[in-house]
Length: 102
Image (cartoon, rainbow, N blue to C red; front, top):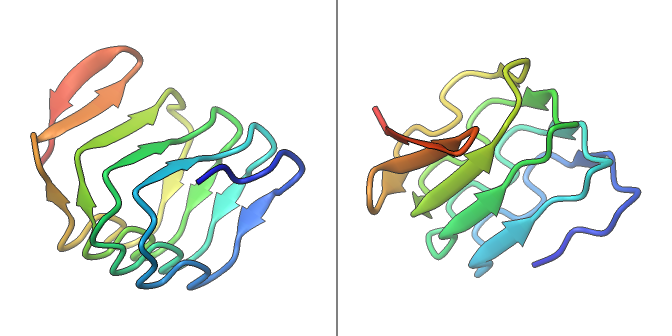
């Protein structure tokens, strides 16, 4: 799924329980609100733009993510952003480095 340029926030619970598999976020995005992708059990990949500054509580709660890509040290993470999320290969890519998820 491609979120169009110009979007600055993904609203609270916007995609709860949706069947989305991959999400490409626009460079205009600044915030992912609480539980935006909660229970998206088919979600495998998300690319987070450098413009994103806030990922709110439980944004990816109970997702089965294989890949999360981001390059911003200044993201403010809410509580339990990835709680109950399963990382199929245990990989989060950060600045081109692969880090084991914890």
